[in-house]
Length: 483
Image 1 (tube, rainbow, N blue to C red):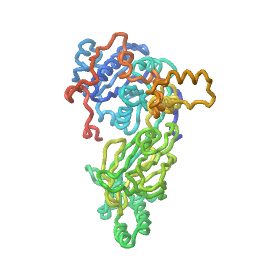
Image 2: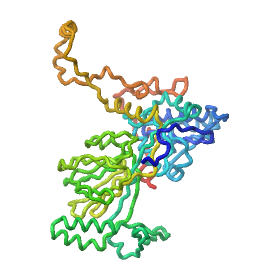
Image 3: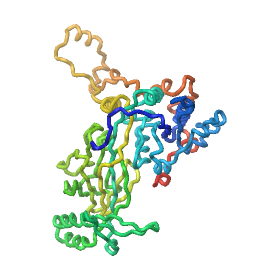
Image 4: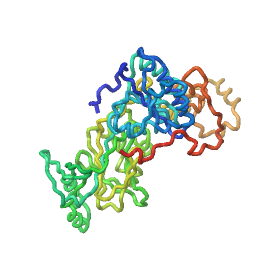
């Protein structure tokens, strides 16, 4: 993925870059107030010899929100009617190039949601740490004003260019053998499609699947092989849906009690037959997510690789792999599988894969640039230390001890200390870095964008959460996110 230009280089902000998108975590009224403060500061702060330098887009759900108070903002200053606008997933998908910067208020899930909305070009993302975990969010809310000022007027910014995977689902379509087909000069097979009132040629995967199904027929028992050979002459697959994923593609057994049986190919070569609960194919960014729980390796985001990790493999001869990003992967549901499989893309759009279907996985040409707090390596190491408590334990004691120190230790020990056999984590000596403290830990230092204190509602940790109707910002439904 070295073809991605400018990664880890310092980029400059120009005066003509004047459109900013704010993505806020849903069902958090506290973050709605932060969104209002941030939008006000961006619009009303003079910059580049302009009194109101930016157009700011916020979630369309906030237009009538009682906590966002859009009407009150317009009454107070009519400039908000012109400069403050509202986005929808459709607007983001159809016009990704109109935005010059995205600011996310939430956690890692908010960054993943932003990646999901922008399925091709992704503007630079400044992620603010206002969620639970923070692998992708190095900036705190109270520090973002200075960070934005440095970006606009200082020496620019550095970004981590995070690779994504393009995952295309191909469906088994035996009826396509009756349709008109043609072959291109490079050997690809196409069929004529007239869906939607327009005729187009749709690429098929007939030749490739025939070849590998014949190879499979030679490996399985004779009776099953004969039945499979009968199906091969009319075997075709066609692409149904394609997604760009930032974390991982997961193929699993779904609700079935049987383990999955999958055929895994890399660059048209058979790698292995996967007999497991499932398979996780991840990016380096996703190496701290599902694949880590499944036993995969932590991988620096600047390494351009595809991580392949089995989920509870039936045998121990299939171990996690790191493959080059130039390799094309295919996960096939063979006809000999006892049941269908299910797949999800960054935890979304879960679909069923039946026998004969397969998924083609390759590196996406559209990466996700996230702005660095310092640089890619320092941010990544800091996230491991603070989110995973990386190497947080008591240091092993030396054999050489001063006699007086040992006597002092014996004198100060209590019976409770003798029972702390497994207390190996020293929580008191490794405090979180101030830049990663969440509002839950430092509410007073991270709630405002101005010198005036923001209005807050004191809530107890044991208080009853508000009902769904009381939230200004509701999550977008799958139908609204569908392209």
